Image 1 (cartoon, rainbow, N blue to C red):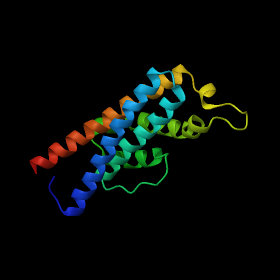
Image 2 (image 1 turned 90 degrees about the vertical axis):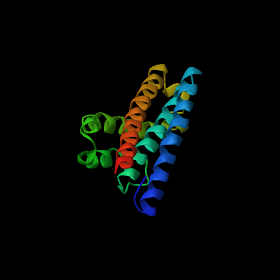
Image 3 (image 1 turned 45 degrees about the vertical axis):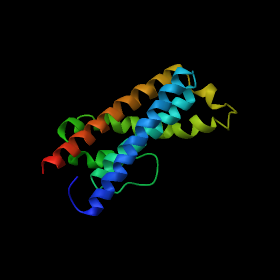
Amino acid sequence: MGGNSEDMTSDLMAEGYIEWARDIFEEVERAFSKGKHHIAVRRAQECIELAIKGVFRLLSVEFPKEHDVSKVMLDISPNLPEWFQKEVDNVSAIVKKLAEDRGPAMYGDERHLKPPGEIFKREDGEKALNDSKYVLGLCERFFKEWFNEREVE
Protein backbone atom coordinates (compact mmCIF):
# COMPACT_ATOMS: atom_id res chain seq x y z
CA MET A 1 0.00 0.00 0.00
CA GLY A 2 1.93 2.94 -1.24
CA GLY A 3 0.88 6.56 -1.30
CA ASN A 4 0.43 9.21 1.33
CA SER A 5 -0.92 8.64 4.81
CA GLU A 6 -4.42 9.82 3.82
CA ASP A 7 -4.53 7.12 1.11
CA MET A 8 -3.32 4.54 3.61
CA THR A 9 -5.97 5.59 6.16
CA SER A 10 -8.69 5.37 3.53
CA ASP A 11 -7.38 1.95 2.48
CA LEU A 12 -7.46 0.78 6.10
CA MET A 13 -11.04 2.00 6.47
CA ALA A 14 -11.99 0.25 3.23
CA GLU A 15 -10.38 -2.97 4.45
CA GLY A 16 -12.33 -2.62 7.67
CA TYR A 17 -15.58 -2.32 5.70
CA ILE A 18 -14.93 -5.43 3.61
CA GLU A 19 -13.84 -7.42 6.66
CA TRP A 20 -17.01 -6.38 8.47
CA ALA A 21 -19.06 -7.29 5.38
CA ARG A 22 -17.51 -10.79 5.47
CA ASP A 23 -18.46 -11.16 9.13
CA ILE A 24 -22.01 -10.05 8.43
CA PHE A 25 -22.25 -12.49 5.53
CA GLU A 26 -21.68 -15.28 8.05
CA GLU A 27 -24.70 -13.90 9.94
CA VAL A 28 -26.73 -14.04 6.71
CA GLU A 29 -25.84 -17.71 6.33
CA ARG A 30 -26.63 -18.46 9.97
CA ALA A 31 -30.00 -16.63 9.88
CA PHE A 32 -31.00 -18.41 6.67
CA SER A 33 -30.04 -21.82 8.04
CA LYS A 34 -32.20 -21.16 11.12
CA GLY A 35 -35.19 -20.11 9.00
CA LYS A 36 -34.93 -16.49 10.13
CA HIS A 37 -35.45 -15.13 6.63
CA HIS A 38 -36.22 -11.57 7.67
CA ILE A 39 -32.90 -11.45 9.53
CA ALA A 40 -31.11 -12.90 6.50
CA VAL A 41 -32.60 -10.08 4.37
CA ARG A 42 -31.59 -7.42 6.89
CA ARG A 43 -28.05 -8.72 7.28
CA ALA A 44 -27.65 -9.19 3.51
CA GLN A 45 -28.46 -5.51 3.05
CA GLU A 46 -25.86 -4.54 5.64
CA CYS A 47 -23.27 -6.87 4.08
CA ILE A 48 -23.74 -5.43 0.61
CA GLU A 49 -23.82 -1.83 1.80
CA LEU A 50 -20.51 -2.20 3.64
CA ALA A 51 -18.79 -4.09 0.81
CA ILE A 52 -19.81 -1.48 -1.77
CA LYS A 53 -18.90 1.42 0.49
CA GLY A 54 -15.50 -0.21 0.87
CA VAL A 55 -15.11 -0.05 -2.92
CA PHE A 56 -16.17 3.59 -2.82
CA ARG A 57 -13.53 4.29 -0.16
CA LEU A 58 -10.78 2.74 -2.28
CA LEU A 59 -11.84 4.91 -5.20
CA SER A 60 -12.04 8.02 -2.98
CA VAL A 61 -15.71 8.40 -3.89
CA GLU A 62 -17.86 10.38 -1.50
CA PHE A 63 -21.01 8.45 -0.74
CA PRO A 64 -24.20 9.45 1.01
CA LYS A 65 -24.63 8.34 4.60
CA GLU A 66 -27.73 6.37 3.63
CA HIS A 67 -28.45 2.78 2.81
CA ASP A 68 -29.43 3.01 -0.86
CA VAL A 69 -26.23 3.76 -2.75
CA SER A 70 -27.49 2.30 -6.04
CA LYS A 71 -27.29 5.64 -7.86
CA VAL A 72 -23.69 6.21 -6.74
CA MET A 73 -22.87 2.70 -7.95
CA LEU A 74 -24.21 3.57 -11.40
CA ASP A 75 -22.40 6.93 -11.39
CA ILE A 76 -18.99 5.42 -10.64
CA SER A 77 -19.29 2.59 -13.14
CA PRO A 78 -16.77 4.16 -15.56
CA ASN A 79 -14.15 4.08 -12.76
CA LEU A 80 -14.51 0.34 -12.28
CA PRO A 81 -12.70 -2.44 -14.15
CA GLU A 82 -14.54 -3.70 -17.23
CA TRP A 83 -15.54 -6.99 -15.56
CA PHE A 84 -17.20 -5.03 -12.72
CA GLN A 85 -18.84 -2.52 -15.07
CA LYS A 86 -20.70 -5.43 -16.69
CA GLU A 87 -22.25 -6.27 -13.31
CA VAL A 88 -23.14 -2.74 -12.15
CA ASP A 89 -26.75 -2.69 -13.35
CA ASN A 90 -27.48 -5.95 -11.55
CA VAL A 91 -25.58 -4.88 -8.42
CA SER A 92 -27.39 -1.54 -8.39
CA ALA A 93 -30.79 -3.26 -8.62
CA ILE A 94 -29.86 -5.57 -5.73
CA VAL A 95 -28.69 -2.63 -3.60
CA LYS A 96 -31.91 -0.72 -4.28
CA LYS A 97 -34.19 -3.68 -3.51
CA LEU A 98 -32.44 -4.65 -0.29
CA ALA A 99 -32.36 -1.01 0.88
CA GLU A 100 -36.15 -0.93 0.39
CA ASP A 101 -36.51 -4.18 2.36
CA ARG A 102 -34.25 -3.03 5.20
CA GLY A 103 -36.95 -1.38 7.33
CA PRO A 104 -39.66 -4.02 6.91
CA ALA A 105 -37.08 -6.76 7.62
CA MET A 106 -36.46 -5.15 11.00
CA TYR A 107 -39.83 -3.70 11.98
CA GLY A 108 -42.38 -5.51 9.84
CA ASP A 109 -45.37 -3.75 8.33
CA GLU A 110 -46.82 -1.67 11.14
CA ARG A 111 -49.70 -0.42 9.04
CA HIS A 112 -50.96 -3.97 8.48
CA LEU A 113 -49.65 -5.26 11.83
CA LYS A 114 -47.46 -7.91 10.21
CA PRO A 115 -44.20 -8.85 11.91
CA PRO A 116 -41.10 -9.31 9.72
CA GLY A 117 -41.30 -13.10 9.96
CA GLU A 118 -44.67 -13.06 8.21
CA ILE A 119 -43.45 -10.79 5.41
CA PHE A 120 -40.23 -12.52 4.42
CA LYS A 121 -40.38 -16.14 3.31
CA ARG A 122 -37.76 -18.77 2.51
CA GLU A 123 -37.36 -17.60 -1.10
CA ASP A 124 -36.67 -14.04 0.16
CA GLY A 125 -34.00 -15.29 2.53
CA GLU A 126 -32.46 -17.47 -0.15
CA LYS A 127 -32.37 -14.61 -2.65
CA ALA A 128 -30.80 -12.32 -0.05
CA LEU A 129 -28.19 -14.99 0.73
CA ASN A 130 -27.35 -15.52 -2.94
CA ASP A 131 -27.35 -11.79 -3.76
CA SER A 132 -25.07 -10.92 -0.86
CA LYS A 133 -22.69 -13.74 -1.77
CA TYR A 134 -22.58 -12.47 -5.37
CA VAL A 135 -22.01 -8.79 -4.51
CA LEU A 136 -19.52 -9.55 -1.73
CA GLY A 137 -17.60 -11.77 -4.17
CA LEU A 138 -17.40 -8.97 -6.73
CA CYS A 139 -16.21 -6.50 -4.11
CA GLU A 140 -13.62 -8.95 -2.77
CA ARG A 141 -12.29 -9.45 -6.29
CA PHE A 142 -12.06 -5.68 -6.70
CA PHE A 143 -10.15 -5.39 -3.41
CA LYS A 144 -7.75 -8.15 -4.37
CA GLU A 145 -6.99 -6.56 -7.73
CA TRP A 146 -6.71 -3.08 -6.19
CA PHE A 147 -4.07 -4.11 -3.67
CA ASN A 148 -2.19 -6.38 -6.10
CA GLU A 149 -1.86 -3.50 -8.58
CA ARG A 150 -0.69 -1.13 -5.85
CA GLU A 151 2.00 -3.60 -4.72
CA VAL A 152 3.41 -3.60 -8.24
CA GLU A 153 3.67 0.22 -8.35
